[in-house]
Image (cartoon, rainbow, N blue to C red):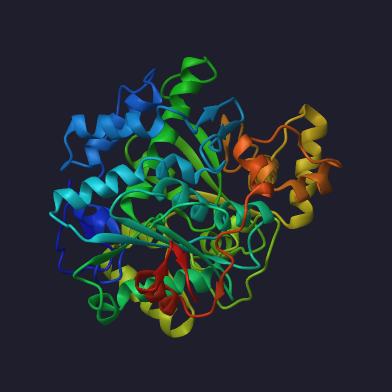
Length: 464
């Protein structure tokens, strides 16, 4: 399988391992597969077996034995996925968020990709996070040889426990910074580092720069697996028949989680509708309704902070899929110059709706009262949007809502909704309150912080 940049009209192809090492394509685009394999006969496979069968179709410059080894090492202690009839729980990994599914595997793919391409430099993994990606990256990359993870998060735009997960993380090869701005500011600044070849050349003999956000194929492709796995589990439990279509409701801000579902559908998974659930930062809702993507608005801090995003990176991959490089280049030139773009969308790919903070809290309360199940605020956005969708359309297709984070990560919101903090949190969350803060820094200049991380270290503590 070869890969091409979403912006490369010359169609210069590269391998999976090179795409993983680079993260972002040299022209600023995102790597996409040149075609989509069909995946059949998956009912009844274990998660690990399914991951192997899917990833070997995409990561063709890895041997099957190599991939099997990485998958076994990534998931042998803790499988981060659980399925019930209503929710695909993706929060049973090391940091209690869906990002763990891919980021438990990513360190193995990255280090192997470096070796396959004869690269001996230290990989500097620059990551912007809206809340959950950062802690998952740090948990996955801490003390991994020949890597250095640097995470930037909005200092006032994540939950208390999300912040503690990052700022208390130990590791000789990690740094964490709050930024004076929102997630979009962090993401834009990180992309500017990737695009600044002169800056990177200062360190090129010893360091190379890559990403662990879902702009990296090594993050995105493993997320396809849980859509197939969920479907298989529903068939195995006789909740649906093989071949029967299902809906998936996906709370999303950066469009990566729902894009993995879109790719699964292109591979033959019988998905009827992908339902994009958004909070008050409804740029994706507006786009999917009108074809107009307009970032010219103020970002709102909500109770679902991982979705507080106005620049949805993975949307570029969807636009490439429907219109190719010319559509992408025209759209993103317009976005840069004017703050918006407009394209004609195909019908029936997605449905979408919005949940406000008050609707999110009411949904957590109502679900808890009806069945005792506690939703985190992001999953509650998905539940509210699905309830509206069902009333509006009358669609009775079996529907699964992606539960993207543990409610224990948002105790203040849960207490507001149900009158109490949920008991018995995972041990790794319970311990956070007693850990020392190792990364207290808040910065304005991301590029300067990256330079200092590389050049100024003393006893593994950054001096600013």
